[in-house]
Amino acid sequence: MKLVKNILKIVLLSLLVIVLLVVALYGHSDMPLEDLKEKYAQPPSSFVSVDGMNVHFRDEGNTHDAIPIVLIHGTGASLHTFNDWANELKRDYRVIRMDLPAYGLTGPFPKSDYSIDNYVQFIKSFLTTLGITKCVLGGNSLGGNIVWNFATQHPAMVDKLILIDASGYPTKPTSEPLAFKIPRMPVLKHAFKFITPHSVVKTSVENVYADKSKVTEELVNRYFELTLREGNRQAFIDRIKSKNDTTAYRKIKSIKQPSLVLWGDQDYLVPIENAHRFHEDLPNDTLVILKGVGHVPMEESPNESVAAVISFLERN
Image (cartoon, rainbow, N blue to C red; front, side):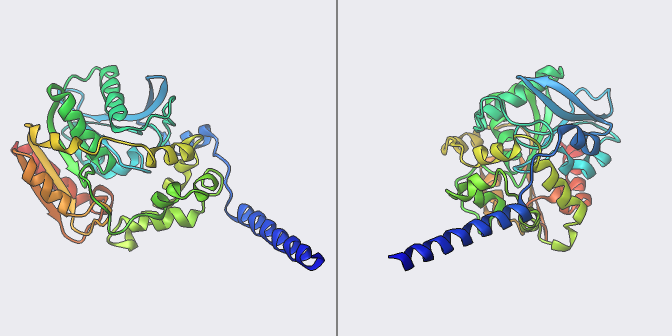
């Protein structure tokens, strides 16, 4: 009995040492919001109060453009994912983008409701606050899901749609970022709020790129540091486990606006089969498949992808 107790003590002590070592190596406290703003909210960034949140956004380009382009990022990203697109599009168009609640500098929803419907309501409130009654609405991944749902609920506010590797159809990824898996793991999801290895973020970003060599240290650091905004890690967990209407995709066929379906053929998170489903269901769409590109074309292949957008806007 004494031997068993000694062994248990050694095991428990060893586990404690391992836990302390992991925390020491990978534990990260939240970064002060003001420090993050200093680095990631330089002009033309602004903040506006929407539904009790101080929303980080950028409004650039042609101020006389009556129908601006509004771009919405995906899970774990921020408005910066559209930097290259905005630099090109703002020459002729008004371009607006924001950090969705749970990501970037905006912070979490006050009531932790990360359903698609609540995101749609947020976009409605955001546009109303900015005095926008109609826009070209574009979104990547989660942002794309929000975009087409918004079009079904508020069609009069949408002039055209840009769906970039958009989610929404029932599907299973053939490859999923590690950061998406951890919030669904019973024990690790609690540790994720305090232990967020830089390597996990890097691996997750690389997972959605076809060309891993394009994943720079600066890019990974941006994703990593914005994850450390107060409340974002808990919000990330809450968003991943949120429940949504699994039949909502049936409404896609009702969308009448001209739509661009833009997809990377090496997207394994939302596989290319989904692009063809949008193409079949949308009556007025243009389908563009980018060769050798992953889940985030606007980051990985900005020139090729924005050229498709400009062509679509000029033609429709």
